[in-house]
Amino acid sequence: MSVNYRIDVAKKNRKLLEGFIDNLSLEQLNKVPQGFKNNVIWNIAHCIVTQQLLVYKKSGLDGMLSDEMIAKYRKGTKTEGDVSQTEVDEIRSLLYTPLDQTNTDYNNGVFKNYEAYTVSTGSTLTKAEEAIDFNNFHEGIHLGYILALKKAL
Image 1: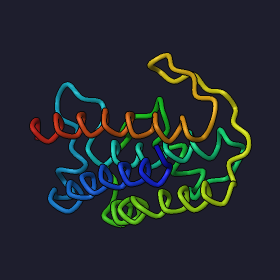
Image 2: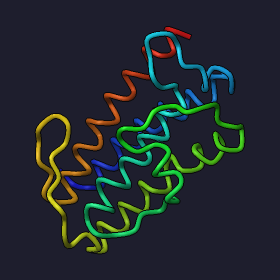
Image 3: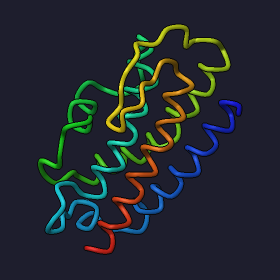
């Protein structure tokens, strides 16, 4: 399976995530329903951040995101307050460009090293290709969370 295919799968998922941004109000994106610890926009931003951490940081490379964004949405964080429309617009703008850059960088041989990392499911990632594959699985989990959140809004 080519990396181009893997990135295409990720882009299709991101299109679904974009639909939530486009079709939910700012209030709905920010609402944390009873029984949940995060909201729709946190889940979307978390997907963007996780892809960069798993693929780039574990490869010893800088990604495209600010340290502030990474700190706010990385694994182990939760919704701490409402995000502004400006922040939503920034998150929306980051849905595709990191994936395009990953595809370009992969095809240009940028990913040479990888710091092995065991994910929450117990699988150990040992190279960028595995991180890209796992990321698609991870984003599917968060798509499921978002669908549950949407029902609870």
